[in-house]
Length: 274
Ligand SMILES: NC(=O)c1ccc[n+]([C@@H]2O[C@H](COP(=O)([O-])OP(=O)(O)OC[C@H]3O[C@@H](n4cnc5c(N)ncnc54)[C@H](OP(=O)(O)O)[C@@H]3O)[C@@H](O)[C@H]2O)c1
Image (cartoon, rainbow, N blue to C red):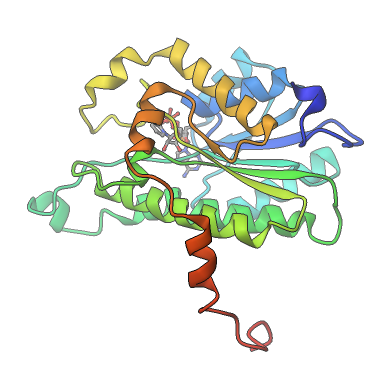
């Protein structure tokens, strides 16, 4: 697979990837799978002990300590990749995310802003990382590149127990669709992964019974399907029957209709020289 992949064809060097949140869970499994496919893989996370554990389990990974909600850390990630590898990334995997329980009838939710952390981590950070990825390559690299945004079926419908997770992933989903359209005539392709419920530490404030059946074997299988889908050029990756069933309930917006609507909303001349 990897020898013939659209992403790897013609690359004059070892492919280079960054997986945010690659210290645990699905991110770690995808990072390991990418290493199996010959990638040189950087992973980042906030918890140093988890990064150490990840590189102890998988010494091929290159660990970077970073909080993706901090602008200076995001910039440092790209600078550090360039310093160590001498060139920009071929693949950015926007995987890091958090989930909190909320209830807008409950004084705990209402007493202060408990939404910002999810907005910053799940929505603002991946968008800015995508910008930095594109900036790092702009005018320098014409080989194929990819951004893989990790979504969730819950991006397509409201989740009552964790509405900010649902809303931030919905925002990321819409940004993913727009970015794919912006980049359609460039070598960078944009992918979206819809994992099923997985038994990771992500949802420790939630009760999700279906996670229990989706332990390490399923996490590894989902990671394998995710990377295989990316390398095969499948833009919407549905790696498990649960993902396929949930996403099928909310069919994608017809691309022809998106074209029609977009004809009515253009960029004014000079918008980029205000
Ligand atoms: N688990 C599920 O049921 C499920 C279902 C659908 C989609 N997904 C998606 O799959 C992806 C991976 O989730 P997971 O289940 O593998 O969760 P996980 O095991 O909790 O992993 C999350 C990773 O993100 C890192 N992270 C969180 N905040 C960060 C920050 N501000 N800066 C840098 N790293 C940060 C965590 O490390 P630190 O905490 O040390 O920073 C950890 O490495 C997420 O995008 C999630 O939305 C998961």
